[in-house]
Image (cartoon, rainbow, N blue to C red; front, side):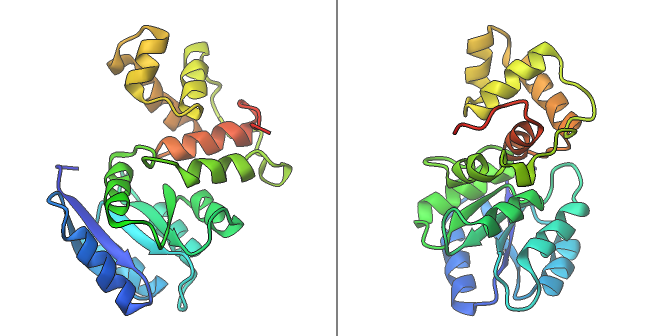
Length: 222
């Protein structure tokens, strides 16, 4: 990504799309390059425009938002695009299913404008959502449950250092904070994070955390 964040909005409600476009247009580092009102239209627009981030309504009237997310991510290359789902209800299984399908996080539709902009920036960079992260709490609620347990998530076993880094990622530590705790360079941390992503098929921190819980490498918090 070159610093300019290209966004596609997927929502079947016209006023919602207008509102989202208006909010994002106030950010100096992003541009809404396209819109879609259905799952099939979203796939076409994303394929044509290659955005960095897709804002996805997960309850589309035409086309399942979860399945659309899964199809978009199946064709993603080099971590792009990333999907940020919008939902009406907090902590529901539907939102977690969207994350399992490849979404990098979720936001409530009533999220304030500045928080929405910061979330798009974070997702575009592959970081966790800023502030009180509902996505992280959602992961903790569902990912380690027996219904979602996948003990063979990591095809290749993690090294001791990679396991330590993963534990800190799950704890919400940034790369810089991990470097300080383990007394290694930030570049070394980035290398370990890259290896962890490769071994669990994750494109960002949220999916590395999901893999950690599902594999049993990290015990559920409750």
